[in-house]
Image 1 (cartoon, rainbow, N blue to C red):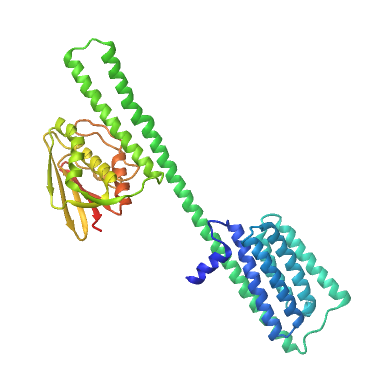
Image 2: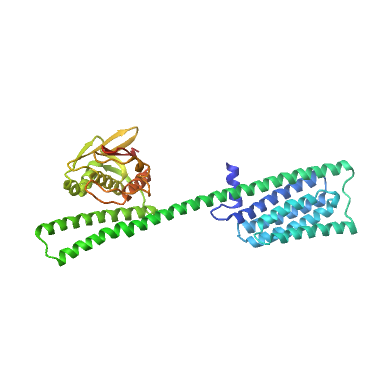
Length: 422
């Protein structure tokens, strides 16, 4: 793993260098390693000091080009410098390496692969240039000859066999590395595309919620206000309209609170501030905000608190409890009952909210915490948008907690939350 990290650092992290630039840096590193191999090979295997010196000079020049690419970000200079250096180095090695009788012609195949990888456009030009350079070297050898470096056929056979093995191994390493980089980049691109698609779906749902579920209650509120202002109403009608207006206003206010909290969390602006909370005090404050809704349906809320010390984010937990209790009241039958429990279990703080209302249909259970969830009217025809449970799931997950439920259609639903005790 340390070698992989070192390689990633030498060629440049993907967050700073696009794939094309990382291939250029990799080609520079690859070329330096190849040149060092040739320095050793020419010095001790075939004993050609001229080629060893040429390889070492080329190594120093390539080190300078790598520095320009990796650290100075001078990619164009490094790209064309590498190309020119390759042709000069190969021409010198061809001349001092026995020409057509030597193994250097095989090196042109590897150099062409590297050059094609590092150049974005007009790659056919380098193919033609390669052919032209090889033909020129062959013609030069035909007219003027090259130094003879082999003293026996066995020496020539060994040199060609070694160079072919080295070139094939280096080609395999280079092409394999490029393919792995390409596949990794493709996977990342696919993951980004899926994330963007999911974000697009969430944005569409958010705008749908805003355009429909927010506009509808506002239009109703406007209609009620028009009736109250422009029509003579009996005291009973006025009282009924005022009650409906209050209910719509409270519901719209709750929806806006959830919408703003969820939007903030999606924009990564929500930070978790965990502290030790007294559950009894927190429940009292939450129950005071939902008690009018419970009183209207005459729903009794009971508490069976065995554990009171909870480590969590106060505001997140307050929003989660308010949403779960609002849901429990919404789907409870008139004169129903809701039970809130807490206890410790396996180093976790468990909190449950149980109602004995309509329950959740099986076909809706898999999407209840997802953005695709669709709200259904409550037992008193209360409306909703299905955003509250999504917000609950997000806020519990942000606190390293877990949320789940058990439900039976017509019998009720119990929501559970588990928070770490430490």
